[in-house]
Amino acid sequence: MKISNDDLSVKAYHKVKNMIASGKLQLGEKIVQDKLAEELGISRTPLRSALQMLESESLVESLPRKGMAVKTFSDKEVLEIYDCRIALESMAVKTFIKVVMKSDIDKLYNLFKPFLNSEEIDVIKYKKADSLFHDMIIKKSGNEFLYKLFNRGNLLICIDLIGLVRPPQETLGEHLEIIKAIEEKNSKLAEDLIKKHLEKSKKLISRSF
Image (tube, rainbow, N blue to C red; front, side, top):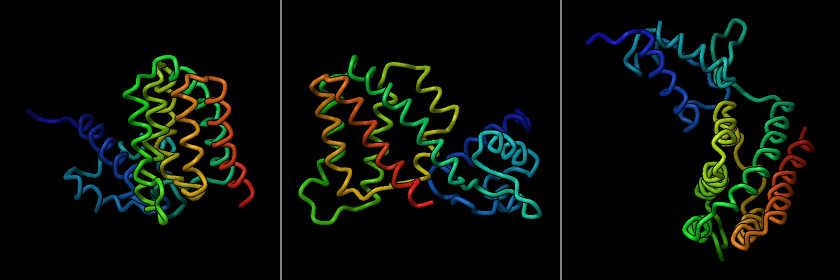
């Protein structure tokens, strides 16, 4: 059965999106379309369509006289991403508490157990734990529309691309406090803690501009 260009475009879209999310394609990296098309085993036509879709989602951008590149975020955009994140995650943690199970609490604690009492924390491993922590609260919140908002705006990918703003030694205790509040089903405290946790990072970002 012949595969249409539309099908190939969708497949290429998902593959390139995963390459951006995983860091295989770095922020600001120029996309050499001939090379990428060859790597994906497709022609430039479906790849071009895939890149247009990704451009509409603000994951790639057209640069004058330079072609396409993985999008880099402006200072303003980073702060806007954090504003959205604060609003949506504080809502997510409230609904998460209503449906949370003991197994969920155990998973959250287990994410950070390897870093307890560690003199030197592996930043790459900690970044993954941090990402899984926030992703789990959103995905398990029980609010499908909230999760769709994160996905449609690629917020989870953008947040991962921005990376850790503060060192693990500073945020480890904050994560554990949030988990404890969730475990105790203290909705107000959990919401306040997650807002404070994210606002500290936003404030640090704004100071660096």
